[in-house]
Image (cartoon, rainbow, N blue to C red):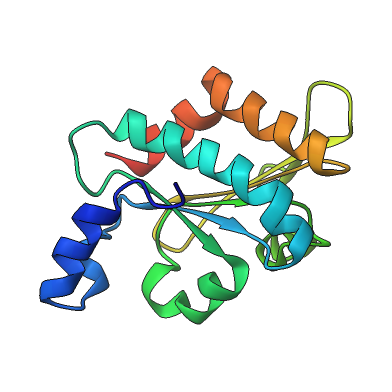
Length: 169
């Protein structure tokens, strides 16, 4: 299901249409592209990642993943820009990944892009937003490599576990 917390969300949002009733600074946004390929191949992978985030969030209602399109991310930027975020899918299909890919780190800071071990030209991206929370990009050369990149990320101790430690203090 694209929103496993639908019943909770409709209960909260139905009373007062205020996104803060379902989202706070600990909510993690998982951003996918808006084209057909991204919807068919990247969204299911993003939903797997969301499920991992939800599972690790446990009983805390705001420690959750929310899958949103890149257009939705930019449309809601005033509200979501300071949240932790993971972009799934390459720069050609995801505008947030494209922003990450083109971003140049300030001199002396760690590299923003890095290779993820394995075949398929898999790429990771890391930086912190203005609130000091992590922003990550995960993609590969093609949909299969993107899926492998995301799976590697949530299985790696240096991946999703570290990301959530930074996000949930």
